[in-house]
Image (cartoon, rainbow, N blue to C red; front, side, top):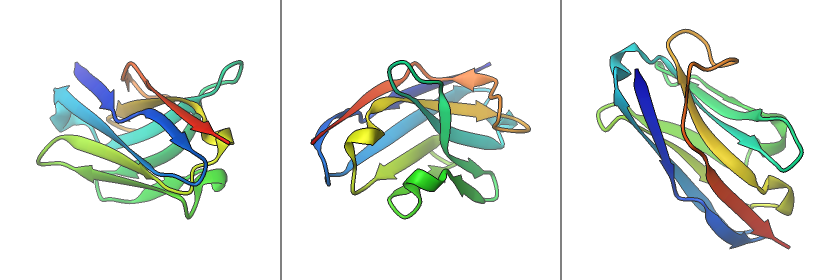
Length: 118
């Protein structure tokens, strides 16, 4: 099993920045893909950004140029640097991980709230 714990959410004004962190523990050697998803009220949970063990990255179009995903394998951490935040970025952000793919992750964190005020 793999456990994921997010931190770093909060309230920020539009145009501001936040950095989310995700700490992984357990059988982390099995993890190749890590990602951040988000879910706004009444919406489905959507993939925001993903990173492979070789540091290949994916971003959904709405965050390209504003968000950066990174990982520190030695510290078993993954980060999401969020800049130029917009009210539409408001959501619960979830860290996710999987050994082979990231479209349907096997492991999830509990989520951290990000609220962007206009």
